[in-house]
Amino acid sequence: MATFSEQAFYGGAIQGIIPEGWVDGSTLREIPDHQELFLSPTTLSSFIIEVNQRVTQEQALSTLDQQSAIRGGIPATHETIDKAAVMYHLRDLCDEDDVLQVVIPPAAVTPAKIPASARAHAYKGVVQMTTPKRQRRDTNTGRIPVSVGGAAAGSSADGPQTSRVTVHYLLVRLEAQESDLLVFFNVPHDEFDLSGDPRGLSKEEEVATEAIDKLVQTLEVKDWGLFA
Image (tube, rainbow, N blue to C red; front, side):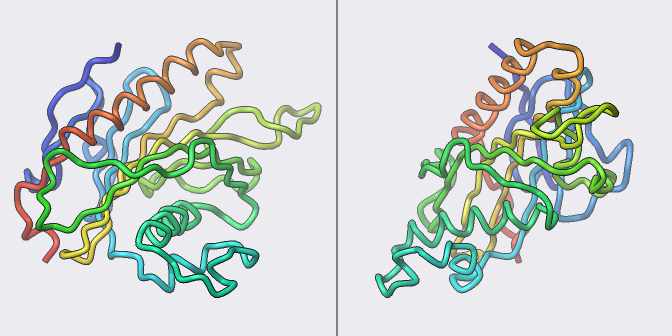
């Protein structure tokens, strides 16, 4: 099993965990104020936590397929809207040519240390993003490196033409604070695929799964003024 250490985010306003030994990305590059970035010292994996304005119902439902029953007139439930908000955030990470595949659909979880007064609703899940390598975006922004991943369908004599990254996520919707707290654990595939190391990739995915599960139990807001 992986080992984790306690970590203060946003100057101590939020408390949680990160994999032990991971590097604070702010010591290497400029990170947006609403984000915290941590990098694996041995792989290309990254851990990002960010605070965003809460996605509205209209924005969330805009991500649903036009064939959805909701668009056919059936009222949307609170959970349906929240799950749609998950997809809104994930699609916001994608470029036009990226392909987003749901590996594990968003499932409701209960953060152990978020009080009921926050009216929080939380969801975790896993997606995989595939992007043409020619569309690689600048990872210095601290966003999910969807363009830094492994070989996927589509190759040529010059090598794979697409990249993949698995994204393990946790979304905590803080209704009273009108905020969405997001955690992404990103596992790019390139280094494992190029070295022929499927076992290494599997182990990295296990670390990501454990990290998200531990965050469900440990994530705590120490200073609610962060969302003011």
